[in-house]
Image (cartoon, rainbow, N blue to C red; front, side, top):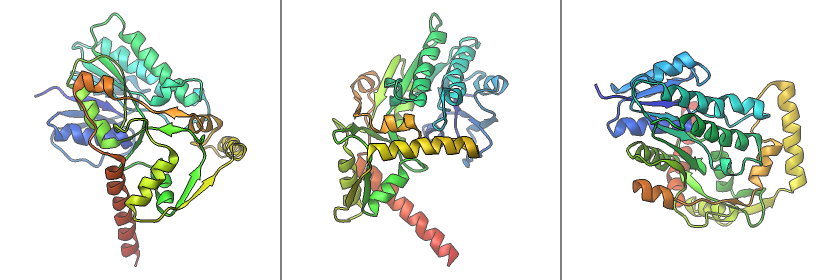
Length: 320
């Protein structure tokens, strides 16, 4: 039997897409799931229940695998104390176990472009620490490892950017960043293809990746593309003052402590949203693997928004 590719965070947005594409490209897959079922039935798929804080579960996941893709990560939290156990210590634990295994698997860490600016937020700091701790664990070993820093990711299953795209599709664009701020974007399917390209190579180092649009997008660029895809005229742009955004974020942080939920909008997240440069470059990854993105933002949004509209209509039909 062919050695499997092990995937942590397999039931998440990115992990589920990666598992499906690994299976589609002929790989055996061993996927770690945390409570949630994958919803994928395939003879080449094996699942392990657990999380990256559970060393025994990680050992079951990683035994005799040919590659490990550490996708599991936390995106919501109040402080570094929330993020570090998964985003930093989890990466370190996976690398340490990989180093002590009988075979030397290929190790890929799914980080984030936020790691480029660790001073902005607790999340960004935790992702950078994860990269550093993984590199430290691998130093002096024969492990072949690489770090991926994708930019903002969208696509089927996304719950973070879809609400913004849907609002834009209704003609309302909240402008919460700097006027000259720019961001790169990436379809989740392209991220999965890039991950497989890295698994199949021996390229080492840190790789940024995006959809190939040079100089990225302004928020107005994104809204204009959404309006074009939905055949709607130009909608309204509503500027959100910085003091209002920070006030809401601070109130949300306090409320999360009172009511016991993990917040997405925090003062640190506002720092990320108002950072002027989230543009990245595919050149290094392309030279190392030959990977090229397939989805332009126009194509990706066409598929995503039409799919969301069909799902909404199906729900309405079922209710009626």
